[in-house]
Image: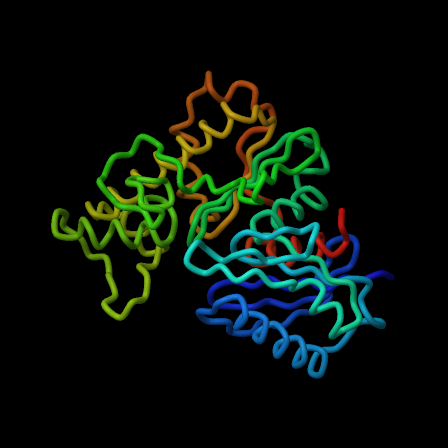
Length: 312
């Protein structure tokens, strides 16, 4: 049985696991990552891999390949991690370096593009060649598949749809420098930012931490259903922003399926609020509808990394 090693590197954790060709996770281990630049990330990956091999090991011999999902811009063809964000640009030949150390062919890709690849291999790609995968978590990004091929762009920067304006006007400045991008309103970081900006204007029981920890979106949804005014404001704006993003993507790429993933939408409450704001005329050709990913949201990045290793 061929197996593949996936590494899903995020801002708080690195998940390493071995996956078979059917998408079954055979074993895995989680490591803390913390804040990093690209060269520091290389050290985190190497130290964690060394520990994984020592403490977990292989299911049945060395894996056929290794895939790594990464934040930021990635050239998957050259195996180069180009940048985390404009302020963290230090291109490194990550795939070649890892291959040389461990003797396992390594491929790399952006984290959301990796998750989109998982959808292509084990998710909606089994019945759709034209779909949009929208990941709504700490940030917002999109993977777009047209005629069975994923859109990447001239600088591997396609899919940064979190920096679209979507008709919800709150005066919130986004990290990109524009105002009222969907990421600044509807992502985990955006909901936290809006909670802090508007807490003085609405009665609320929401716990807004002062230690740098983000607001817990689960608390926002729970309190919204209990009539908390701030949480209703936050939830209604996020739902409207996400619905408008979906409709914008539908108008641009004409998908037959829209897949939602990420912690912000995995809750059925938010999913229903989004659905209620979708215009039927705009959505009439989305024949398979707007669906929540059937892949485990906790492991979709790991599955995506394994799919990258498979090169499918």
